[in-house]
Image (cartoon, rainbow, N blue to C red; front, side, top):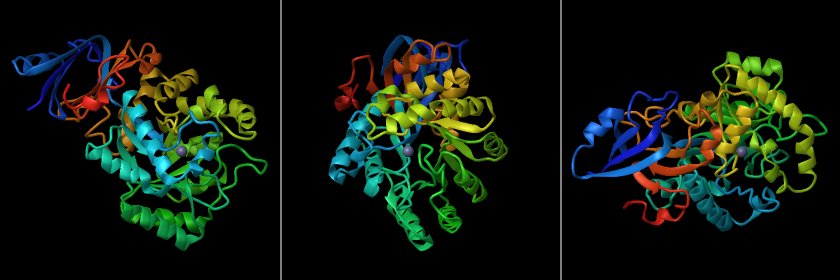
Length: 400
Ligand SMILES: [Zn+2]
């Protein structure tokens, strides 16, 4: 048995501090065995490796609720680079997964990649061949031929949509992703790019197989159709109206917020054509919607949409829009695990859960920028990273 004691300066177990307890987590193999004083007691034997992180808050490993493995905003014209050959996209995915993991993301939900490459990456990661977050995957994102979706694949008509869903399921998808709108408001507003027939077939096929459906949807009639057809998760929601936020609030549908797509200045520089100007023009309206959502009781969580290693920035944006720090952090820990139906395994630190935990320098509830100072990463009981500069530790992560 592999026994480890991780000692920090502070312990945030997920939606609660254990401030009356010593900041300690005892890990046996891939599971958490004890927290606090119980961890210190349980670890009193010779064969326990001790990791001291006195200036760090120990907290659950982070969950990115919306990513794409082969999107890389560090590349010029990065959205157009989705047309690169599949082997190039796959090599890119290998890099982005490593970056995400080192930034503290121990689990990620992938909302579509080309040619099932996310499903192959999920298997390779689970088999220990590929370092990265544990993955929940959508396979191919389903978009209309005339619709948005640089990362998606085009399908048209109810029978083709049905076939696409079935092929995704048989390839190993965990959820089904459909693009119903663009990402910015266009000259014709926010048209919905699939018909009601197509959406109903898609939801029916997915739900009959027990898979949830997520939709890329910024608002407009696509949002109303999504709610009406029983879609489980709205992704982005940048332009929801007040009445749509209220409808969401009254439903059990989740909303995944991805503010950096609009509010990262660095990202805007990597966009092609006039997309930078369009995003800048629409920022103010998106900010107003985000302010309303974070104050509501909508079931919102948080993702990067492929802004790899950028979860800390997403949280900073949301706190800037008025979210409470602990609520925003729940969107990448406890509530994120709820969205993924994985809360018995991940999202908080508790006995019996997977030993996915990180140490951040500082106190993230007092100052969410601490989330950008990840010093320790432990995934499934394996030490991935231990210091600020420890970016090459993945090679021998199993041994330390
Ligand atoms: Zn996306």
